[in-house]
Image (spheres, rainbow, N blue to C red):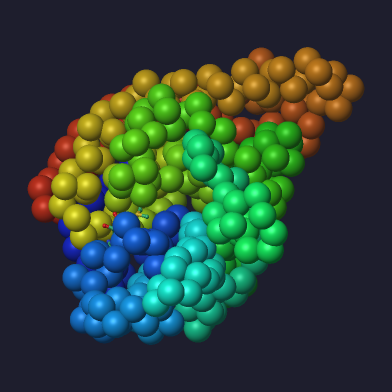
Length: 343
Ligand SMILES: C[S@@+](CC[C@H](N)C(=O)[O-])C[C@H]1O[C@@H](n2cnc3c(N)ncnc32)[C@H](O)[C@@H]1O
């Protein structure tokens, strides 16, 4: 099987994608009112720059979200019927004009995605791996003016229209099933994302500078909400973590990123995909075998492709895949073709 991966340097407000050409969106926009993104927003919209100069937090927050709203409209058009948009975002706290307040980005993006015609599904809250030494804000150990620390982010989940339709016994869908115990963990609404995977393929500092999310996050979402051969879009691609998750999972991807230097970081990451995909597949199977060893009475069906047992009939057809090779096939937009083989 082959997949394609496209990285465009450009503005997500001008998506220029065919209607209904994307099966899943996994993205994390620049977070309004988080200072590291002020310049990026201001460079794209004078209203943002003016509001920030005037220390008008409310106007700046609204102008930044107005910019994102244009992207939510675009992805609603690009999604297939039944396609899912998964948007990762954190809220912001900030003192402006002498006043400290919360800027509830997740609530405002829910409004934007709803206005774009998508339906909200139950979402996920995930706890960030934090290495902050100074955890308290405000009056420290004195009441009443201390503030809770924001240690979580949201994954907002929206769907276009009704549930996605598949032909009966669709081979790609059944091969993309997840193990029962994976389902129980992934479909919980509260995730603890551990640091192991992201530290292996990018150091924490680099991740913080680019605002990259840990690979585990898009990886789970890609496995939960798409099937083998689907196309996954990230309109705010940064270092291309969503594309990497799609690549190692046997899905095609389209990435859009306004910063050319960040967009260029995808290529060396894509070169790690053969080794990474083998590690990931081996880890998944090993974790499943451990589950079966611990729960011998619950797994009674024989898996078709692996020497193991599974809990439900649907899982019998699970077929993990790895990346055999990745080659660059075009410039501007940079395109890659990947060949996949069963694990
Ligand atoms: C939170 S970061 C995404 C990080 C990404 N998930 C990763 O793992 O590297 C948001 C990205 O959106 C980009 N961005 C901001 N405005 C944009 C726009 N209008 N079009 C495309 N990209 C944009 C920023 O340059 C930044 O890289």
